[in-house]
Length: 144
Image 1: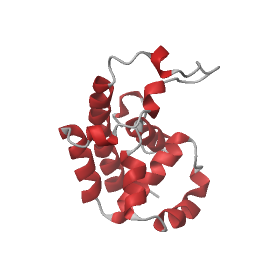
Image 2: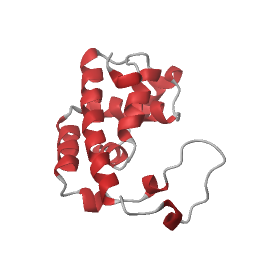
Image 3: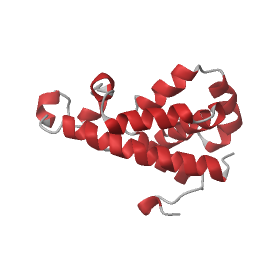
Image 4: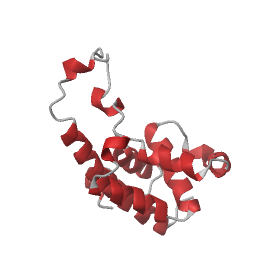
């Protein structure tokens, strides 16, 4: 499923995604939740700013550039696995469906995968959670 190198790359991308998210949050820092016009959900986390598209604005930020370059530098198979790990982390993919999902991911274009990763504001969280669900990392501090 995932090899040690895949896990190390996923952690590296998660760290870069966390840095990019901090920049994104800083850019949206003065935006009040009430200004978003979204009702408070009955349950679960609520981050209305998470759905705001800032890819164009972030494109010149060093943290976002580092994330984009790191993803682009990865071999295709590792990018596919990262994309799949995010789907596991979101709860969109069960671990038991991994082999079918690999076949699906292989049919995606490089742009589909890159956009799927770079356009995800919560990439860091989904990668960490996906690694946890796959049994290759721990969530608290993600140290192991």
